[in-house]
Image (cartoon, rainbow, N blue to C red):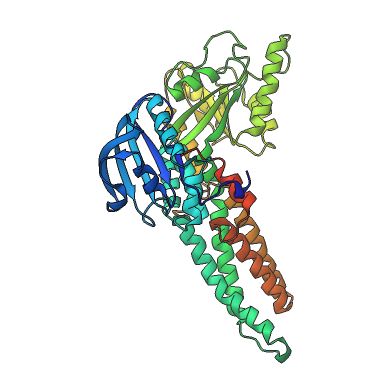
Length: 460
């Protein structure tokens, strides 16, 4: 969607609450003429004469017909979400009433808003920067305590402050380098090279710290893909059921019961794990459907961040376990070997058999033994990459921009080590500032903004 299709001079309206029957519905109207436009059909106080941030009970009229009794919340520019005159009408939650009021507003001269158009106007009117605007969408989509906390921190400007601090420190030296270029014929040096090098090393470290939080941030935002794998009848489905605390997968003593992948989500202290139960892995099977299931298992394993490799401690030897784990070592996932069915095994025998590996977690998914230890192990896998920083990167666009800024600063250091000219230093410093500016919207294109805001829900 091209930016010129937004027509930001228009008055826009939309349903801000989910469609469907409810106790109430909220309609949002924004634009220079929003208050006057609503006032045309509002029977009650004269909304054009009321103070900002006040509520007014009245009726929405369609000519001489009462559509509904509503509560009008008035926000006078610039003290509103969008920075424009804004009214929110709380009406009864009938879809018919909501659509009828929208039609009245359109008849008065408004148009229906496009996805994300209210937040786009907040960005264009400098009520939010671009990273804060994106956090609005993340906040709406948050499905756990940590995703909510991360989005809220970003929306309040936590990430923006980090970027502003980075830019401020770099801009001072960039201006001195640029000044040198104006006096290039006189061979003067305004920017101390040792101080610049120290600053660039410091900033590069800060940016790398932010970049390294992306793995955890992505997990917080989208959930951690976690595959339960192992040989048939190792207890994978029982483990899935135990973790999600419901009978989600069929459990049977018959090997090969699971033919297709089963996915379910569960939360550990605010982190969402997307559990995937897979078909049991075995080398030979005459069952074509089971073979397809095993192929899907390997596909899911390759996509996973964590693999819970389950084995039966009563039937698996130490040698066989090593053979079974070897193919997973090159996949790049975190592998957690889990010895299951310890309730059926002799503790001393189990300890002697598998004592050579300290990374095995012994459980009984059927009896619920050591399930809390498994939860903590999963949590530790994600948190080991967490940097001591309240700001966590959850957005792939921010991650890419920070990575490019980091590369530009590395090039500055390389150029300084070879005593290259100030002109080349200035070029790479400008590139770093450009990529940092992309994050908060100091640098943006119509296509970028259209892509970001088109993913918002209508009414936000």
